[in-house]
Image 1 (tube, rainbow, N blue to C red):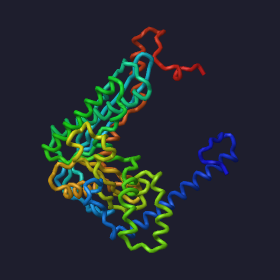
Image 2: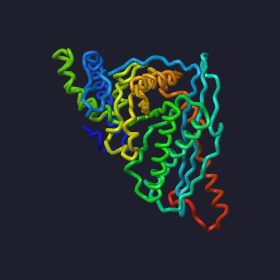
Image 3: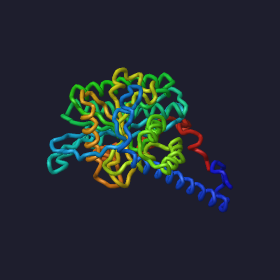
Image 4: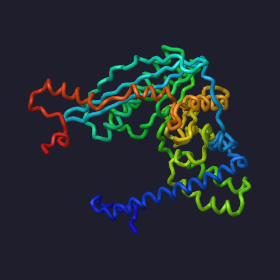
Length: 390
């Protein structure tokens, strides 16, 4: 038998074919385990009550799964913000090209009434030159920080200049580089990012704007761990599964040790259903420490708006006294905005922002060439790996 982890040359067709077959077989087996586990949980979902009474737990709703109602979009204005970024490492400097745009959709009782954009339909990208020596990892971190910072600044400008009911960010509504900003340049940018997040929270709270984040390709394992630690121990005690079903449950529950959240929830959730809501602040406990008291107001759930796409992770800021009302409003709004295409579980306003914010690789190459034209012919900008003679 060929171990899945063993490397095999692509020239060895026979061994390669066998390994591909083993990989496919493992994927099928894992999928079947998740399917069996989800089926048992669906049967038990009406019986089991989640541990919401325990304040040390992350779960804040008693049921596993909730149906989601359609939202009325009449007279609502929804903004979606996304950004595009490119980076190019060179000798002597690094270039970062970034832009962000807010797509703003106005709805009436017939659907989408009008679309406008901030700062405009096709904003010019911003060029950032970095002369401080950074290794490739630090450059990647700085590039990500600059993109997120640009998106936040664009979002804040949009909600200050227009009457907006809900703001949807592409990705998380919390910083994602907490433990990685090590160099002076990245530390400074990270501090700017924290300030931008807290300012955005404050502005949304003051203007009563619903702040949401849609994570389209979540690689989190948080909810899988919640199932393992906080839900599975209650399955046998609080449900009416048969002896055979309990055996099946015990045989398959370990599949969550190597499952991403969306992979497992794709089997558990039906279209127009969402998971229970959970606190973000404990994932892990120090992740949001720089956000101060705001970290206690951030929550998340997973929702499956359409049949042929995996669930999306939705994060939201709650500044209302009625958390349940915010949850239901968030879920119905995301579910309705994401129902445009049965194979894409993303709000249409974000899809529009993404399309307009995207940058072509040629744009940063043109800038590199423009800089090179102003230097002596012997000056080399490109890294050696990009200028090999053959």
